Amino acid sequence: MNPLIVIPARMAATRLPGKPLADIGGLPMIVRAFQQAERSELPVLVAAGDAEIVEVVEAHGGRAVLTDPALPSGSDRVRAALHAVDPERRHDAVINLQGDMPLADPAIARLCAETLAARPDCDIATLVAKEASFADRTNPDVVKAVLALAADGRSGRALYFTRSTLYGEGPVWRHVGVYGYRRAALERFCAAPPSALERREKLEQLRALELGMIIDAAVIEAAPLSVDNFDDLEAVRALA
Image 1 (cartoon, rainbow, N blue to C red):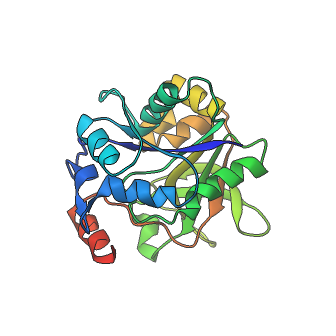
Image 2 (spheres, rainbow, N blue to C red):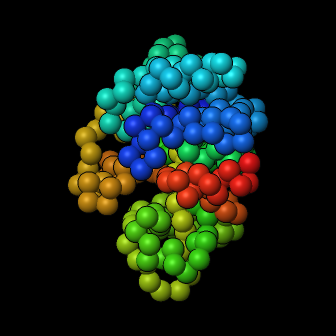
């Protein structure tokens, strides 16, 4: 496989406007994110919704492409950037890595690519981690993955994703919003309208399941810190 990491980013974040340019230890968040991604030794591209993001990425030696700011989702931004830089379709897989995980372990992008390569029937690869605390089970902001877990406990086929409380014995898997798409799967996903379950749960990965796509999840030790608000930003700054 020949995967490309694409990091979608836009300035108009609802809870933390201008988030990609937020300073973390002297570097903008988006710069931290692509520099971490480059340590995976896979090629990296930033799919920017704003010219300011392109400018700052290129000023720090990265590669970025400007996409339509009106695109409805990060997945659509990834697809648009892929069309712009790779019309020859050299890259047969794309890793959608979130720009608001600036300290994410570079190994997670490779793990998504390896999952796709190891499982020919898998359309989309993603990641899960065990719940951080019991409170995760009832927190609607924590997305849970319902998996048919493999015998080794290190991966599983996704059956559903939900914000609802999960009951019963066994681990609760916290979904980590990193995706590896086969190129054909990304095209099919973005071409389809939002599905009923997607609209109900506000989780776009449910569109893929309703389309009959196969999503496999690999287990990682802990979910990377994600910056959704100012408190998250301060937590990341303390670790940078």
